[in-house]
Length: 212
Image (tube, rainbow, N blue to C red; front, side):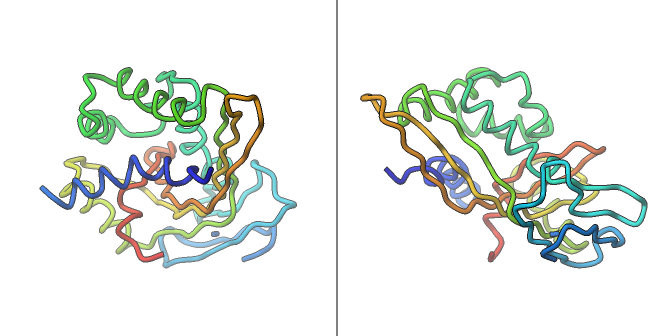
């Protein structure tokens, strides 16, 4: 079965179509830069841990692998458990309102239930989802402005990210079939982790407009 990214990205791809219709050098050293100077890329290696710093801004703000993975990890946990407590740490409120309405859900809980049902129907109830960090790219000023314009014009959400990163990761879903046999599917996954007031949020919408 080769459904992994197909299923995860399918929910976002369908929404993206509907919209159209109506980091980070390969080492463990810290890269110091002003905010949004251009695109810098750092590819990680196997010696890095989630708490390792992959980017440092000139004001001293550090970005760790854990910071970049956080919104995707929360999203994965929501899909795996059907629990909605942390959904506000995945999407800002205005974006979450759009997501819920786009799925024709009555509220956040019913939206999360839809996600859980989608995955559990395909992978049964014993499945895990994980994103492993590979690399990141800092969005420059123009890209940040384009990002905000996209959300304002296509989603109807007013957001003002202080900075954002394109995150390349390996998405893996492990599961058991009805006979109890274990399987695992993996593929490259891209998303944007954007930061507002120190909180990182998840984007699978704007990134689909980029030529990666």
